[in-house]
Image (tube, rainbow over all chains, first blue to last red; front, side):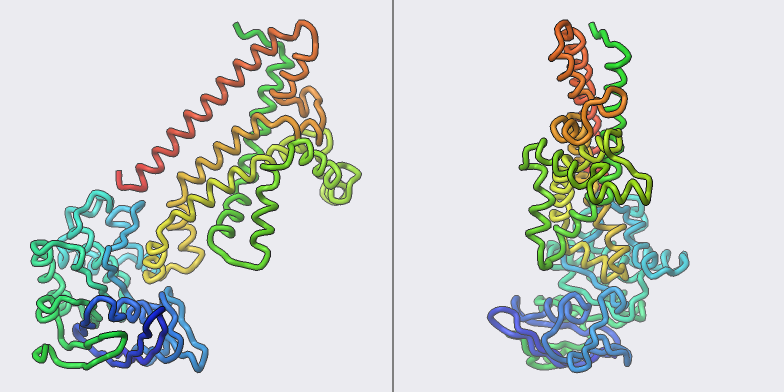
Length: 219
Length: 231
């Protein structure tokens, strides 16, 4: 269970958000510039709120009053970035293993095979990111975040940089991810159609503020 | 065509040894300082910046003299090192290596720093979310991605060290077999009647070494670049 209650001034406007999220896929929905990416960067620990509290499964990740700020590397929150951000000097296989390696966990061939099958990236394992298409890169990025055994998975418009055909290709993987991997997801999007397919619930953001938290039907 | 006596070949071997030692020993410091300047803000940063680049702008003889009055056998730091650790720089090849290292340091730092600054910070953010603490992030992401710059920095430093003259001759003088590098040997030969042929031979050897170093560095840098971009 993720609880967020934070405030941050970003140039012209400020982000002021309060919401909770349990299982399934919570979509942060809103127009560009609504503060969605800043919000999940704060949840991930890549950006520091001015004020407030963030907690996950009972553990306080950030508390301005108590001066708690757990570094990103210790939050165990997976993050799929809009541009993938795969490490260019490592093969796909090593990219996938990176999170496990950093966590000091023993190899888990079952989990590895499962993620590879789920995302259909088997043929890509020995390639370098430079030789992958956009869609392939995004699937590897999802696999990489999954294989670090996160408590929560953040996805920042993972399909935004893809064309319609690629989006249609990958969306089923993401819905399957939502249903099969028992990790809650926070999914940022400004595309209503995409949101309808993936969301378990929707948190609307505009101008940095949470406007409403609804079930998908009210979209 | 190349006719050299053993004294001249000694100068060649000495230069290679000194330049190699100077480059390898200054590498960890070069990486440390470059990372500090590229990534951290701190009080006194411009001062550090200026001190690091000073040997690039000061006349080499001035740098050599400064080394002499601080690290010479009877100078404050030099005496301390000699008495407590047995490290002597005066009139030794180690002093020549130090002079070359100091002169080449700014070139190395500059190349490495630029290369670190060019690394996409977003990749480092991604590594952080995957659990990499600062040390692992540096070792597994920053350093490998900075490798082409590190190689370039090393080759620049090596080339500079190979050709070093002013600071070396001022700090440790021109002793054949100990501190007489190629440049000093050529200089000595040109001051002596009949030394022209040997001088020319040394010049040719010098050019060959420099060309070889440049070609090798290009090749390594290209390979590193290719590995980085998915070849």
